[in-house]
Length: 404
Ligand SMILES: Cc1cc2nc3c(=O)[nH]c(=O)nc-3n(C[C@H](O)[C@H](O)[C@H](O)COP(=O)(O)OP(=O)(O)OC[C@H]3O[C@@H](n4cnc5c(N)ncnc54)[C@H](O)[C@@H]3O)c2cc1C
Ligand code: SF4
Ligand code: SF4
Image (cartoon, rainbow, N blue to C red; front, side, top):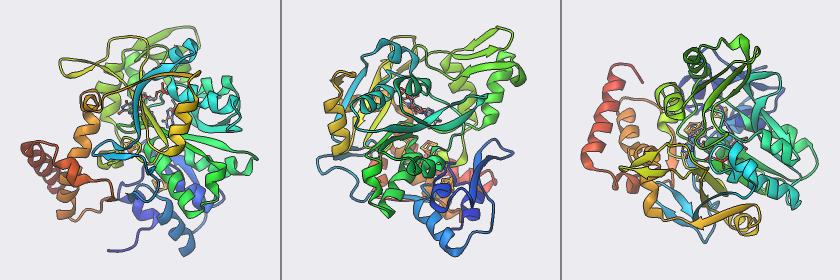
């Protein structure tokens, strides 16, 4: 099979829009831009050399992921959920952070703890752009207030890894926060240049079901009857758990939509193709991962409004030290691994069905990501055989009809 080029990665639909290739070859060579389908994709400013293409192949999480020595020696590998050294649920101790954040605010609280205990000098993460309520910007935050401005999920394209060169140009150590594919790209960059682990001592992530295209956000706005030009502020969720999707207009009108409708009926119908082939929705390459610790109802997550609660998966020794030292910032209790499948059913079914899905695509000659050490066969063995058959046949049918 031909070696991957950047163009082939993007054309095959395997680009997740992380921005790792920009970090690998430099912003004077590549930039992330929104394409006509509403995705952030790398755009070449000059022709890539063979050395550039090699650098892209080495850092790109879209074409494959592999577990090396990143998991802590103390972590055991749970099929579906990855390397786990501690599983907990809890929330930020600061009620303002807990309320503003997506889930229980544990990510923001840990970032503030890292800054205030001077373990890092700043944080590279994502927040809404100052001049456009619909654009996501990667930013370098150095204070509690700046971190708090980034709290809350942005269900739209963001490419925080493209900001890595600017972060590395600034003196000091920093923590990185991003989706699992963003973190996997940074982990690959550190593997290429191990000295960077001193500069980026913490990689934090959150579970991710997929990035919706900007067209999804525009559909939400249409449902809210708010034209984009009239928008003053836009939040996908937060300010409660799960909180409302909220559009504030320039003339003071407020329109809202509940999380179940905004995510479940609109945004998740616009997911990027690569996300449907993602075997790392739980952030296996991060030091510590947060997610929604939904309470259950009739075997399914219950989205009734409550005080926020985060699920926390501690993976590496760095993650263990962070969680253990942050007792004044976050309140955590142990969480039972047997509950994971019930509160994160999509993460379970996507990874359990991944081998069947990838096998069908290979049979139809499609290029797919290569996963090594992510235990896809063990995950499949946890799923009912008829569900695997359905996954295989359904994917094959969509390939045959040219829909994949
Ligand atoms: C696209 C997407 C899909 C998700 N899918 C799931 C899922 O399947 N299951 C689940 O439990 N949780 C999912 N979440 C995450 C969940 O909504 C919470 O973000 C997570 O539980 C962390 O909550 P927190 O209160 O600790 O984080 P907060 O304190 O609110 O901090 C969130 C951090 O995430 C960063 N961030 C926000 N949006 C983005 C983005 N688009 N790209 C990169 N960084 C970003 C912010 O900069 C901030 O630092 C998803 C989030 C996104 C953005
Ligand atoms: S490194 Fe990231 S942005 Fe670049 S091609 Fe790969 S997935 Fe896409
Ligand atoms: S589902 Fe996977 S590939 Fe898609 S944005 Fe999330 S982590 Fe990246």
